[in-house]
Image (cartoon, rainbow, N blue to C red; front, side):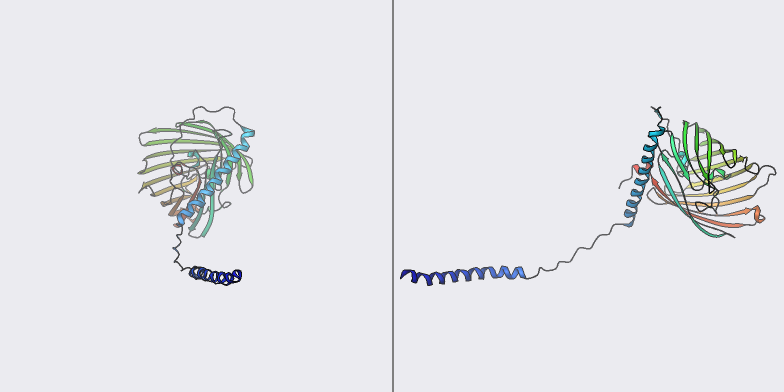
Length: 359
């Protein structure tokens, strides 16, 4: 009797408890089923394009240095110099950041070029030059390459406006250079490599350079003796007279004489370069040049006048050069020939400014 009486009561109490639980849980269930209010998303911050360019540039620079280190390691197992210099001589002053002879590090320079010369039209091309330092083999050994080898040019500082590509210039070159003696006053080296005309031609050479400094004046004499399987023996002499103050101005008078068994005689040339540094990013210059044969009959083949504007566009690795000018070539009866040359220098590798750059 009591068991039957308690059963309905238990059922009633259980129903009440179940209803209370459902009543209390219903708001939570409703809240769980109702969608969350949509919050406005924060605008995405895009990286500045110059930072992205820096990242790509650093990546390529690391690949250039890695390639040089790999080649250095491979050659060191075969050509390792048993004599290590305990106290290497001080590095010579850098007169031109593009002069590979003055750079004590690995570097690659790519230069897209656009030129226009009256009568020849518009030309577009690319040049490359570089230097890989190989310290594992020897602190004195470098691999130097240039798509437009300028050692056959008698007007230093005045590039041929029609040389814009790997094969349109006089020739390219790749060579190993071993410095025998190296200090501020005297430098000697031997080199062996290939010259491309465009077919590869073996080439051997000896270079001597003597420098003298006094106050703001510097005199340099560079003498090169070479032998090629195609042109035989030859020599090139260059005398540079500099006067200037770093960061303010530079005046340079260069005289060059070239002779080889494969040439038609002795050629000579002279250039006068005047530069004014407007700031740490900009330089303004003007160049005058003459060149021609000295033997068997001496005459001037080309008179040249050019202006130069060089500016750093970004960091220490992107530069632009704008070089308008006028030539009076003998092949055109010395008629006035206007021209303009625009070049970008994209520098990869290692250099002093990059070591202190803040990311």
